[in-house]
Image (tube, rainbow, N blue to C red; front, side):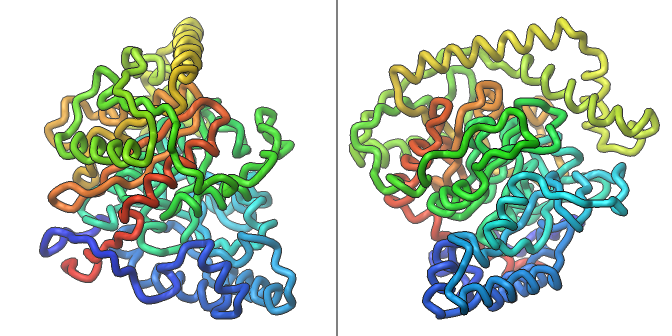
Length: 487
């Protein structure tokens, strides 16, 4: 399904829809506690919005209204009895279709997987959400095995951008970001192996966090190894922090999971950036940006400086590590497709097939050489963050481009890594990286600001993102395109 183009260019508004889908997770929980409305009412509103809007963007591959409403009823009963399970109870949430979900198929964006299952267990973050009483409404779109930076697949079609549905929502968590941006649940979780949370966050004007590796456990292990993270996609930084509180808990199925955090990520979130040493790298020393991206990101940096941050223009000083990343990435892609037999190559995305063929030609020496580059880069950033608390960059050098393409028309390469130079380096180094919306191009396309911290500094990254968000109104902007789009 490819959404049709609009009649006119999109615009933005600070007046969100006048219903429960406009509320953040924190606002929903406050309303439940006060008795202003119930989890059932909020869930019904989300399901109605999915019914109205999802055909425009193709964000969901599965919606289970019956199960969601049953969960919402149980949540409402807990609130009525004064025993809610905590700050996630009754919050509608969507799950990227890369995570195992008990009772629902996990197709991973491909036709190679039999939906019959059996589907008997939840992935760790899904399990934590169920334990918290969250209402799971459905599963969101992804390209095959989450392999690229846009969301389309031969089996499930393409996911359009809420602001301009004839453009991509990004990927590979494009369905999750599109759903959140349209109010189809305030929380979603995605995976990020090279930018897959931050890319769609930038393209859709949402908040996307790639936490420190291991903070959010993953099971089954990703074929992309320790490049792959899991993290929140939300409309606000506070919602991202609240969701992280729930899913950042160890799981015995993930041998690399970190211990539980000692406090809440909401603690200190409002402390601001005064006195923080922030390095601003406009292009990492080797990237060419769209001029509007340059302008908007520089203006965002000035906002941080205006709040008392000690900002200095400084490049980390590394060459593009795309070659090393590609070895590690496509070795993983080759391994995952291998399990479906030789005939699978004729049934998958042609771009993925080319990546698998490249991965099949790699040697153990290639893999070890790429790992050595990764280790060196991590060491370099360790030293860099002794001088600077945080690094800020554009999330992407470009705004969203046409739907159904792996790269913009006329771009020098079809490789998704050719237009994501700010995201995948920090999968190599496993650092926390946050994308927050920082404005719109002249034709209405969102742009993201990326905030990167040293490993384990997730709270600091969120704090800086919140400081920027608090000083601007980008999180309050809503798409109105869906009301003016051609049928």
